[in-house]
Image (cartoon, rainbow, N blue to C red; front, side, top):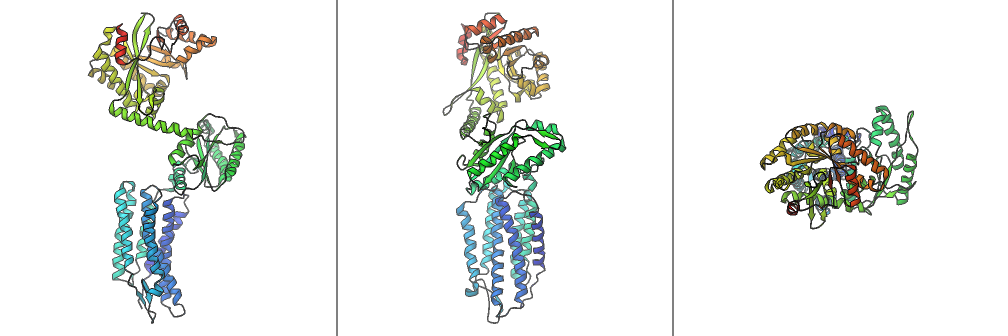
Length: 638
C-alpha cells in the first residue's frame, strides 16, 4: 500500500480556510464573479479535506467499509475536477464584466464536466476511473488520465479567452491565470511521477489565494460617506437580475437641495443623518437593497415582491419624509421626489433602466400624497433622441455638415444693418432640423462643444475675409463662445491664430458670452477678454434679463454690448412692471457706456417700445430671419 504524503493537502486546506474567512467577512455585492469564486473556495476546501480523509480511511479499508471509501473517493474526484471548470468561469466573468455566459457555451463546458462525472460515479461498477481489487488494493482505471485532458481543455479555454480579452484583466489577474496554467502542468507531472505526493490541491489553493488578492476591492462597491452600496454596485446587481430575467422594482429617491443641506450640517450631524435615514430605508426594503447613485439620488432595488408591496413601501417612505428627520437636536425637513420602475414592464436593458430612473427623478411633476409616481417610459424616447443627436453631431464634425446662417442686426442710430449674429444650424435626414437649444447643450455634455466652437469661428472668419463684408457696411459679426472655450487659459492665442490664417482684422469679430459662461469661466475669461479687447475685438453679454441677471457681471467684465433677452422684451409690451424693469435696465446699461441690443423683436409694438426706451440695436424676425451666407450678402448689398 502506498504511503501518501498529506502535508500539502493540510496546507492547502488551511490556505482555503484563510481565504474563506477573509473573503466572507467583507461586505460585498453578490455577482457572478463572487458566486463562482465562492464555489471555487468551497470546492478547493472540500477536495483537500476529502483527499486527506480518503487517504486516512484507505489505510483501514476492509470489506465492511469498502463502500464508504468509494463514496469518499467519488466525492473527492467530483470536487477536484470541478475546480478547473470554476477557474475558467471566474476568468470568463472577470473579462466580461459579470455578463451572463451564453447558454450554449455554458452547457458545453458544464456538460463535459457532468459527462465525465458519470464515469466517476459509476467507477465502483465499471472501474473506469478507479477501483479496488479483491485484495482491496487501490488502482487507477482506464479513463483516469482522461481527467488530465479535461483539465487541459478548461485551462486552454481560459488561456484563449484571456488572449482575446486581456485588456479587461488587471496585472494581478494576469499573474493569477499564468500561475494557474503553469501550476496545473507542473502539478500534473509531479502527481504522475510521484503518486504518493498529494500536491495538486495545494497548488490549486495557492492559485485561489493569488486570484483572491487580484479580485475587485469590496470597498469599490461601498459609498464611503454613507456606508451603503454605491452606483457601481447598483449596476452590477441590476445587470445580474436582468441577465437572469428576475422581476424587480426600482424605487428612486431624489432631493435636489440635499447636497446643500448636508454640507451645512457638519460631519457629526451628517453622519447621524445617514445613519437615521438609511436605517429606516433598510428596515423597509431589506439590508442589502439600498444604493446611492449620486450625491442626491438614491435607489432601492427589490425582487420577489408584488406591486402592492412595492406601493406600500413607497407610501411608508413618503410618510417618513413628510416629517422632519431628527439628527440629535436638529430636525431637517427634506422634499423628496419618488419614482418607481418595474422590470421588465418599463425597461429591458440596464442602460434604459439607469436613464429612466435618473431622468424621471428630475422631473418637476408633483406626487400625490402617499402615492408612487411611475417613471414615464416616454423619457427613454427623449434619451434615445439625444443619443441620435450626439451621433449626428459627431458625423457632422467629421463631414463638415454644419450650416452657418446669419441674422442681421439693425443699427437704430445709423438706420441700417451694420452687423449680424452667426448662428449654427444642423439637419438630419432622420430627425429633421435641429435647433441650437437642443443640440448645443448635448454638444457641451459630450465634449464636442470645443470642436464645434472652433469650427464655427473658422467658418465665420473665412466668410468675412473672402467676401470682404466690411465693404458692404458690416462693422462686425457676432460669434457665440461656449463655456469650455472660455475656460481655456490661452483662448486668445487660438483665436488670433485663426484670424491671422485668414488675414482678418480683429475688429470685425464680436464675441457673445452668456452670463452663466462668464460666472463659470470667471477670471480666465476676464484675462482673455482684456487681451482680445486690447487687439481691437469686442464682447457682448448675451441673453441678459433672464436667469441670474447679476449687475456684478456688468461691472466686472468689459462688455461693449448687452443683448436683452427676448422674453424680457416681450413681457414688457403688456406688463407695466416688466416695462419699468426694461426701461431701468436699458438706462443702467447705457449709463455704463455699453450699447444695448434688443433681441427677439417680431412686431411694430415691440419695435416702437425698444426704440422709445433708447436701445441701440434690434435683432429679430421683424427685420429678417437667419439667412444663408449667400442670402445675407444679397441682403446687405441692397
